[in-house]
Image 1 (cartoon, each protein chain N blue to C red):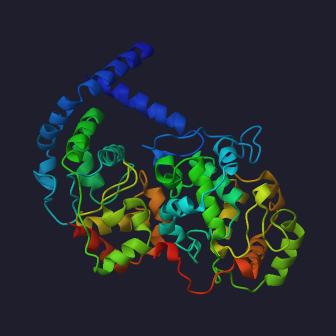
Image 2 (cartoon, rainbow over the protein chains, first blue to last red):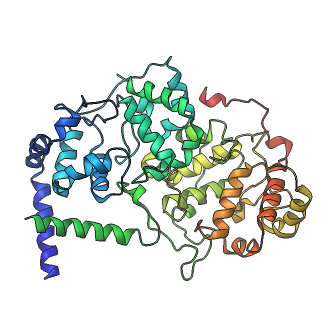
Image 3 (spheres, each protein chain N blue to C red):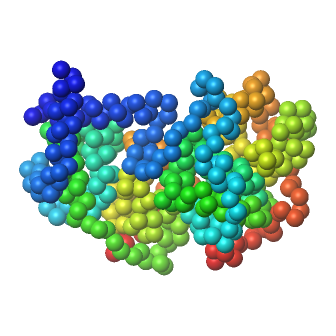
Length: 198
Length: 255
């Protein structure tokens, strides 16, 4: 019986891959139907309040992992538990994939930072650039996030939560060991620099 | 329909779980082209330095230091253009390190034989290249002059540290911590104290699973006082003058 189920599952999975364009269309509908637009904005880049992330163009694999982790309780910082988790309870993993692919497809995130901004030098010397790329617009792994143009309050919150191990999911263990290099004031400057990458 | 998706999810989770049986590699998710993991400290029949593969290939290639400079660019973000690392030990000094040590550690990190989430993506072929690139960057790193002011300990117990070093460490790491290229023993002299402490602790606890079992055995009975004293001593050993850079030197290759 288990074998049968797995075979069936494999077929469904294969079918899902073949029908990727249809899923991408679903992603747009899901983004509205599941209520995501209320906080993240209809275009996924005008969030309701400072501190909420912009999603348009973010790495799809990164978003997919975050949705899974929030639903599973692995990411439990900020609004993850009280606000996001109840919504994700009603979102299946294939639906998360479709959402992530749709949102990722709203990119690419491009842009240049202000070379004279005080946060730029910190971004370069505190080793952020190594993983998130030039001006936060070229993450080196598909599971790492873009930072360019992201909401400043959100960036500061997440980086602080990673520093204090309040956020511990996914790839945060790659970042946590370097966070002691950055003070709160420096972090604020870096966030402001990144938020203004246009 | 919902049930089926649950089974898919379960299957995926189960597959992932098998992959993390020995090491949590969730941070490696999405990485392509992962070489096979070798046997690790604690596994049956683990032999230090027996993992072969890319390491063997890289160390027999003729290095091209010009390309090594280009490969090193990605390393420079954390290890600095000078290869001097961070004095607080967050990142080690690489300058002056033996090529075979660099090659072995890179190959080990790439194959997940040394668990280093922060470094891992940079050891992947799409960041750093294949065995030739590894050989090239190792040659480039060796030529970099070393940090004249590495991070050190409190300096309060150096005589004790010196004695411990002579009795326990000289056999492999050499009279003044110069290491041994042919045996893959790292140069320790002038390495940042906090980095030495961290790696030593991980070796002692079995967390650094590409460690040499002889060393694990050797330091088994060291107390905290011993550890601090010997590593403080090591961090303060001055490398030969011809290997040390001048204070404030900036690597012109990256200006």
